Amino acid sequence: MNPDVLTYPFFASVVMAVVTGIFAFLVMRSWWQKRRPHLFAWGFGLTLYFVASFAQVWLKFAWDPTWYRLWYWCGALMIPPWLGQGTIFLLVRRGSIARNTMAALVLVSAMTFVFMFITPLTPPMPWPVGADLVMLTDEIMPSFSGSVRGFVPITNGLGTLMLVGGAIYSARLFAAKQIMRNRVIGNWFIAIGGLLPATGGYFIRLDMTAFKYTADLLGVVLIFVGYVFATRVPKAVNEARAAKQARKEAQPT
Image (cartoon, rainbow, N blue to C red; front, side):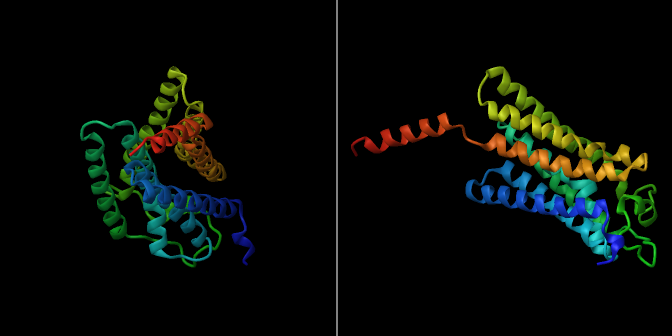
């Protein structure tokens, strides 16, 4: 293997690909079993996280315009709003608000996907093996009026607000009711994990991209930990469910 590839961003991307791949599989499997819309939105968002992480690994070795477009579309545009949409489905149970925001998200996703794939790219040639994709973005896809890059503050900002704001709201709600402490802890982990990747832009502007990869990796790890905490069923709840089921089975038919 070319030693130029063996950098911190490369190893961070490999770990992110493994973590997000496992996480996305678990959530999508849960959605397949339960068919809850919030699980689908989270699972799809995590699948995009995996694709972006895998693309980062792939592009360390060679230039590929398709993988680059997928990397930018998934990572810069779509992950936060899809994770945030999962939170909207979970918190807004009444009316059609969640369905309407989902319809708007699907429309924006399709529009930016098409826009991304018709945007001209100007990669440096020969391709610098092991190069930092973040540092090459301005060269590969210059920012100009009407560029797909103009959607980033909107999709990232709103998505992060939905994900982090929803997690904080849930944590405070369960804490106020003094119930399901596991969900209080889990939602705080999710809130912090969702906020960390949003700080990446500041590190990029300071030319500290290593911290950007750290924020992305630590963010998804904290969201994973939070998901495990929040979805863990307490022992008392399991015992109550088992007793209820036993009473139901004991009733004469």
